[in-house]
Image (cartoon, rainbow, N blue to C red):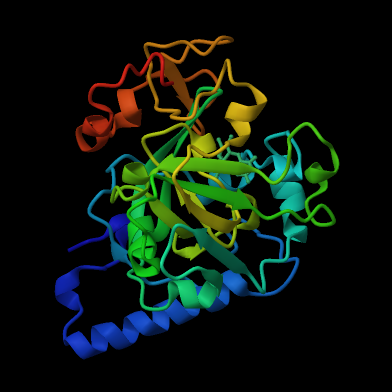
Amino acid sequence: MKGHFGTNLGREEITPREVFFDRRRMMVGALAVGALAGPARTFAAGRGDAMQKIDVVPGRYSTDERPNSLKDIASYNNFYEFGTGKNDPARHAGKLTTRPWTVTIDGMVDNPGRYDLASLLEGVRLEERIYRLRCVEAWSMVVPWVGFELRTLLKRIGVRSSAKYVAFETLLRPEEMPGQKSRFIDWPYREGLRLDEAMHPLTILATGVYREPLPNQCGAPIRLVVPWKYGFKSIKSIVRITLTDTQPLTTWNQNAPQEYGFYANVNPEVDHPRWSQASERRIGDGFFARRRPTLPFNGYAKQVAHLYDGMDLRRFY
Ligand code: MTE
């Protein structure tokens, strides 16, 4: 079977089971090393030197839409810790030290603790999943993420039955994240999901893109991807995951509650107060290309619409 991008990744080619598991352990190792590699590394899109390709299995949820180039994915970003311009993250995120990296997991869990990244990745099944990501300013991209299901981690940590939401926090390190020196956001950047959204198999923690470790500007070394929601739910450079029974504060909801609700599901019928959301511009299509109609739940309605049965999604935007 031909995998995406012309590489052979068919399961049938991975013959003996032991070899597969050995290889996978190596892949996870390579990823962990790659993701942790070197302080202040600047990502050079397309060159790939000093970066190891990560060997992964193709995920069953991928779209067959044509992915954006690595150059697009790594040069047009929102990561306000590095500035508000779309090119700022690519220019400034090289300063971010992603090694060592720990993620605190706490709240209503059986095994709270501070986990280093390698231990979080140990034994996880890394997949390549090609997802659409849509952002509020009506642009979209298709990205071949490398990651694993968030629910794998949550199950391993043990979620208590009292937990109803998952809260996420980004690193707070103004000396390396110049945007944090201005106070237009109450740092650290925060996001949250309802527990059933977090446990949905489409929700992944990504550690790579195009089978390379995540470029810093894309949220290295570990970020959330929730493909049916607006991009802002996909919090980058995560250092804390908290299980809670109350709806968590989120950066965008806190900053502009009249514009951004907690749910942030893509609903083309509801205009943002300052612009229409009925169509979108695919990055890389060229400025004058025809805009694409925006799909409910960003095209993932079949998989996730049932999560919101009975909810008025105009009210719970
Ligand atoms: N995470 C943090 N920590 N800080 C941010 O400013 N921006 C969000 C989201 N995650 C953001 C963040 C927004 S608005 C978008 S659209 C996506 O990241 C963009 O992800 P991308 O740059 O990988 O396309």
